[in-house]
Amino acid sequence: MSLATAPAPEQDGVELTARHHPRVALVKPSNRRRRLAYAGLTPFAAYVLIFLALPTILAVVTGFFSDDGSLTLDNVTGLFTPTILATFGSSFWLSGVSAVIGAVVGALICYAMLGTKVGGLLRTIIESAASVLAQFGGVMLAFAFIATIGVQGLITVVLRDTFGVDIYADGVWLYQVPGLILPYVYFQVPLMVITFLPALTALRPQWAEASATLGGTRFAYWRYIAAPVLAPAFLGSLLLLFANAFSSFATAAALISQGSQIVPLQIRAALVSETVLGRENMAGALALGMIVVMVVVMWAYSVLQSRTSRWQK
Amino acid sequence: MTANQAVRIGAEPSALTRRLILGIIGAIFLIPVIAMIEFTFRNGLAGDYTTSHWTGLFSEDSARTYRGLYEAIENSLVLAAVTVGIVLVLLLPTMVLVHMQFPRLKRTLEFICIIPITVPAIVLVVGLAPVYSVVVQVLGGSTWTLAFAYGITVLPYAYRAIQGNLDAIPVKTLSEAASTLGAGWLRVLWTILLPNLRRGVLAASFISIAVVLGEFTIASLLNRRNLQTALLQVSQSDPWVAVIFALAALALAFILLLIIGRLGSATPSRRKS
Figure 1 (tube, rainbow over the protein chains, first blue to last red):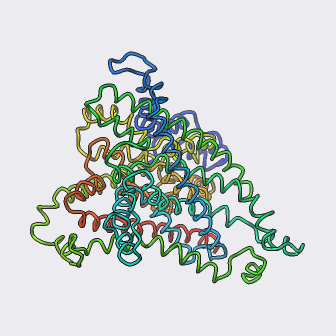
Figure 2 (figure 1 turned 60 degrees about the vertical axis):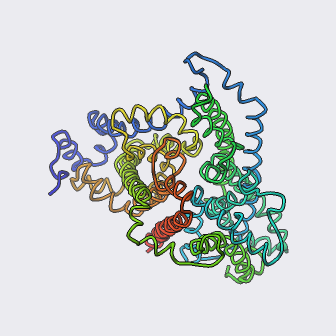
Figure 3 (figure 1 turned 30 degrees about the vertical axis):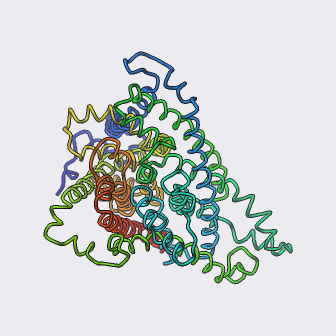
């Protein structure tokens, strides 16, 4: 028999009452038991405080300190220098472009999956593949694209030798910001499938029936019924994709070794450079800038999400 | 409404449209994977093919050459195990406790667990650097301590997996029934709830493993060695082996998530019956 069968003294009373008046005992547990239950929350609370709350606060606060530990706004105003603003600009551009492409292609896949059986083989495979590829960001993704469209990549070579097209006629762009678009799209599309599919499958067949009964065309159904219902979900997923690309680091880190053209790479430069003084605190200011962007985007996402859930019940 | 009707009035794509869309996009998405496989058979820049990169893995001196990589894989596996431990020991009991005793805290817990999406790893790592300088003093500098940070990274995924399962079983009825029959709190948790939460717990564990095996940001910026940082390092001297290991990691992740998919899809049908 296990530990569980040896009741602690204070539980005994509760269990006895529970046997006679189960409801009373469960709705109003003794104070002592209540306190015990609260104590049960402390390990997780402590863990989250030390490894989530504390680092987040530290990350933001260091931006307000100078190297010698005095308060300063220099790092934060440093965010508005042309170099850093340009970095945020390319981050926005990269995230925006990859999010829009990812959202459109992903939505197309979701549409194609309408009418497939939930839990069916095709559905399970596509959903699993989507969860893998959405997690596929990072070093391995960089490898995949170097093998595909690197200077000696499979596609590069086939296009050059068979079709006479040199994708690098104007110089190698894979290791620049534009080179990140294709790898980013590769993990954005699957994320779109994961987030948008529930909304699309929640479209009720009755709406299409009603529309058809009233003489609505296929176009009318999608334009006047499906599109307005799906709009918040689509925009919400688009924002999530934007946030996903904006905060993504590993792929860029593995592909771009020269320069820091996007914000996460600036943070890397600020963190690892020991030669440039005061850069460590710059990382804090950059982190603050990123958090501000992420909070705004995720707030808008949650607003849209609550509008979406209205149709999913 | 039958499937044919749905197609005719345009609510669903026809079989041909579906095959066309999925086929074309699927083929495009396969290209990088195929390119990776093709790459592992290339014989340098000579233009012909060789299997030596694959066979070389099992040769005598590979153990020496790739010792760093094998160590890094070991590190990553330990990290995955400790992270799953954190999910099971810290997150799971808290979620069950909140679900049963403090329903009003549910929103708060959900909010906390979703924060790591808004505060991504690249931001978190800025504040983790000072935290870890203390952690190293207390627990030493071994790699497994990184799992504390990974436990935070996997929170949103693990939370979603377990919460989905918690919402799908009648926790209150089960625990009331067990208490009425005289079971203590621990016994309710261990013998009644845990078996019912098996799917959610398994899914949470697998997704945590997949996330930890793919993690690069925190390890790289805190100067630790895990699978991904080692892969990047190896790729500079032996890109073929790096790609082979990347393919293996990808295949492993796919299998893990395919199992999650089967677990997830089995839940509703079982509940219906």
